[in-house]
Image (cartoon, rainbow, N blue to C red; front, top):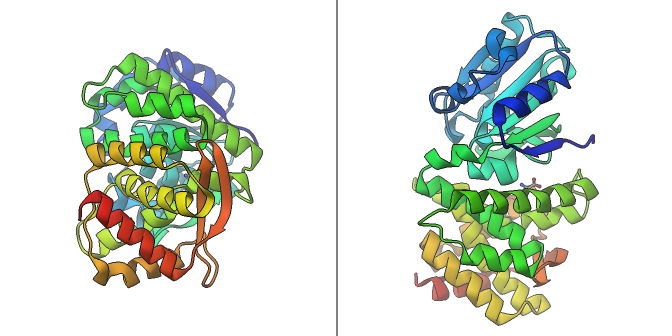
Length: 353
Ligand code: GLY
């Protein structure tokens, strides 16, 4: 997979101008959703190359990450004469960058695209690393492809208008990057004041967080090995996310990941010796910032079934990424059903539900 250029922008319009010059194209398309069309597109109004860009707008949020929406993007590209030499800019959160990336990867067998993520989750995770796709048959990101953007342009000024829930949701992926990288980064993330945000400092933290992801993706773009480190918190997290959806009380992805981290640090502690004090400090931060996802032991079987259906797993084996220490990653760890139920007991006990 080709390496993508990731830029932490000082001036988004200038960075986009440069990115467009590096990527010759016959037609330019820009994909927005109903929010980014209004809130973010105006930030690009001075870019001369965008004057003739054709806008394609889709509905916002995960409910629109569907085959129908994808088909509507393919249709717009087709009707407006996109060729294999056209270029698509995806301006939005993870839903827009994932779906737009997949539309670009598949239309006429692939055209170039640029991601401009507008949410914290998309900046530190979704828009970087080339995973694209849509939800299908009730399963998240079930259809997709690895297809890196030519450039990812990160403008943290967009975060000033992000609501608190989406901010803290994205922050969970940053916390995960701290846990899988090094102690100093983990310490600064736990100390960050998430209620009175210092945006200049946040930009530095976002830069470090993206670097963690880029380093890992560069080593293992197709997730055969070390990229699985990025799945910390996600095996249990996806099960919480699916249960929440099934119970009609959907939660933002990052919240589920944070609660999944609680579970998987416990497994890390009992299976590979992750230090108890660091587990407790991380859990305290998660409790304070994410609250608790409540369930009782009657839901254990259902949560276990969701873990079995996770696309990271094969047949009966449930796979986890665990940590021996901050930054000391153990991929391909498995746990049996009794241990998983014990993990859920621990979660309920320490999170108070
Ligand atoms: N979101 C995890 C990954 O990109 O591998």
